[in-house]
Amino acid sequence: MKKALITGITGQDGSYLAELLLEKGYEVHGIKRRASLFNTHRIDHIFQDPHVENVRIKLHYGDLTDSSNLTRIVQEVQPDEVYNLGAQSHVAVSFESPEYTADVDAMGTLRLLEAIRFLGLEKKTRFYQASTSELYGLVQEIPQRESTPFYPRSPYAVAKMYAYWITINYREAYGMYACNGILFNHESPRRGETFVTRKITRGLSNIAQGLESCLYMGNMDALRDWGHARDYVKMQWLMLQQEQPEDFVIATGVQYSVRDFIRMTAANLGITLEFRGKGVEEKAIVASITGDKAPALKVGDTIVLVDPRYFRPSEVETLLGDPTKAKEKLGWTPETTVQEMCAEMVAYDIEQARQHALLKQHGYPVAVSIER
Ligand code: NDP
Ligand code: GDR
Image (cartoon, rainbow, N blue to C red; front, side, top):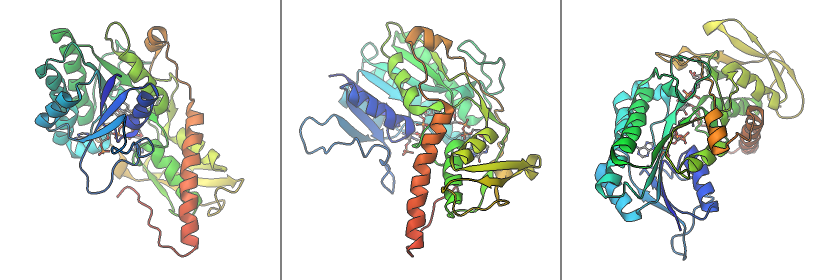
């Protein structure tokens, strides 16, 4: 039975990847951080009681900032495959915590590679690094492919650039099977609530049900190539099953703006929106409502405004990937369109919002968490 170790198993991608590897018969080990509240809700449905026999998923407390801990876990697990998905993954937050972001995202990758090498596992353990389209930053070529030059635009992207190159360096210097997946944005109902797509699907669902009154957005002109996380983790696994380690761009090749995604989400709620004004004055007003998903709204309500606090000190305005190499060499194609993904996210978030609204109607105190 193959053994995989996943850093970031409690995150969006970690949860889908763990599901996939369990389906494929792996023994899955994951590193979780100590937190003051339970933080395993994304993997609770696949977790197995450690008291029963033949358990195939095991969690270890750990942190990418702690090399002795990483070395001990790698030694204990002796993994065939390591997926380094753990990261301070929020671009805007990286401007507020640049040093921590570098420690986790750049040095954390080095610590993990060193643990593998130090333990003499460099010829046994295959290594996947979660690289990112943010490396392209101020884009030098459209669409972006494996050969497009990098121009990182945030402490997050700069840290990920170190991780990208140290992965290649360990491949070249020590003959490790180590590779980078350069993944464009990918989303799902499990996406963190402060990333833009989930903020929109969850925020508008809450507004439709009367739990919030307005969505405050940053740069709605930003263009992204959005895919579904479930499709993208398949490629993470495929990349480690090749004869030779190589780096791949994973994207859909289709691009939308943040404003387009707001419109798409609203349409899934039976709402059409009219955008008025420009820049910080821009707002979205309800132009029509059909169906029963937005009982709290009426035509003319303003439900989206701009708050400059969500603007970034340096922005990545446009990203569009060219996944030709992955299609040709890995036989990989994305299965879910952005429209299907948006519908799935809205279906999940409207159900959550309905449940909260029902509790509220029956007099239970309901506080909905939003970005504070
Ligand atoms: P998430 O933010 O959902 O998950 C990040 C994971 O990393 C969580 O499990 C988190 O733990 C863990 N983590 C954070 N800090 C540490 C640390 N110091 N030590 C150990 N673990 C830590 O990210 P995604 O699942 O969306 O992304 C997975 C990876 O892919 C990340 O590296 C991200 O940068 C990269 N990436 C993501 C893309 C996307 O669009 N989703 C695109 C390209 C790259 P906790 O649950 O406790 O917070
Ligand atoms: P990104 O994702 O920065 O691309 O990083 P995010 O969803 O945070 O932002 C996408 C774009 O939307 C704009 N935007 C807003 N973003 C957020 N979070 N909140 C807002 O209110 C808002 N308004 C507009 C942003 O400015 C940006 O242009 C994600 C992460 O998963 C990274 O870890 C990963 O490496 C990249 O995707 C690829």
